[in-house]
Length: 504
Image 1 (tube, rainbow, N blue to C red):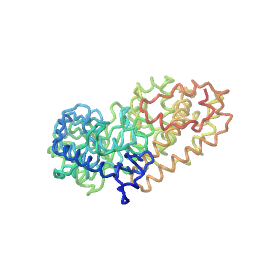
Image 2 (cartoon, rainbow, N blue to C red; image 1 turned 45 degrees about the vertical axis):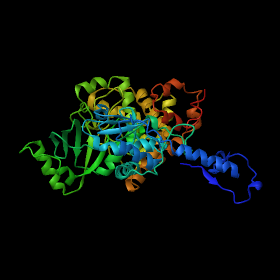
Image 3 (cartoon, one colour; image 1 turned 180 degrees about the vertical axis):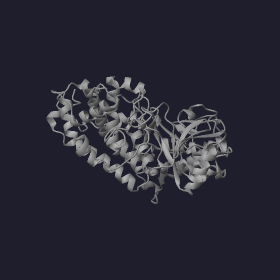
């Protein structure tokens, strides 16, 4: 925020060099020089006296924000909220597994979730300030889940409600006579397409738990279907889930929650699924558990290497092979071996959708060994360009043939793999932004290292393999889905790591 300051002359009036007010804000000094001649000062005082007797008519509040909350937000932020619209009893939050969310000037609250209004109202302020960038995607929607912004929204939302009315509070008027000049920060805001939501199952209303395995429960609560998981390195698994989403993969959104907190929310159903879940939570003694959205559909096989009959039919389809290649590329990013990179685990992939094959039970580790020893990036790129079968594609084909008797289309598999690797590199800024918004701990360092190692592996691919003369653009780009989010287009580098590939 920038306000005009008055620089009053201490010299004699006949020495005043400026006869009229000169605005110097264009030079970013925030200073305006005024006419300080005696006659001008008297005239201005007369005008001020007249205006002080005319009460400013209070603008009608049509936003849906309570007057006290709106006033508190405006005076804390310096931004007018006259253009905000609150949608009460909205069905849209449920589509994003949320109780409420803010997007641009709109706030959507599910039925009975008015308590989140102060929090979401501050999210609107953050977006007006141009401080919100997408960190993940959910069902095609760009979402920001920056923990710092979330905590700030809690604090400032509470402050806005506590703020008392003050006669000296500034009035924000959107007209040319405004006494305060508010200028936006010199950054590009892409927040109009970005959603900030309050995501966390509340476990209100009916809660019904079903035991899937000894360490995994299916829970239906408050209109949401979620999974509670007890085994694995849960913090790392959650980061793997959400990194995949930031990269564009179809994976569940997840977070960790305190087991003791969940114990206060799960009603006992007398020896039913809830009781089994309560027993498991008590055994965890206050540790964190993984809470994730449930991905609809069935696993590709009842066992890791036992494909269902429908999966066998899918394996004959080149599009399915293409989607398998995409999954393999995303696994390279997070260093996940328990799916395609080493061996084969059909249980960690779900029924194919129009957006690809959903990836569940995601794990992360250092990906260097997979880049160098398993995939061999240079080999798969050169093989793809020459219409040959790479070592990695051949091994994958062999494993699938052994369990299903079906030969997959390795050309499509390689195209899916190369397409996603290219996409990840082009989205490197977005993925990095997401990672830096998370806790700065060891698991976060590992994932950032993975992203850098993958990019480095692409950069050393010989230039002649990326020549447009040897590769029709459609061959690679035909499988790339154009994203609707403006942020992707703005973040996309002019050349990326494939400069010749994108020449017109």
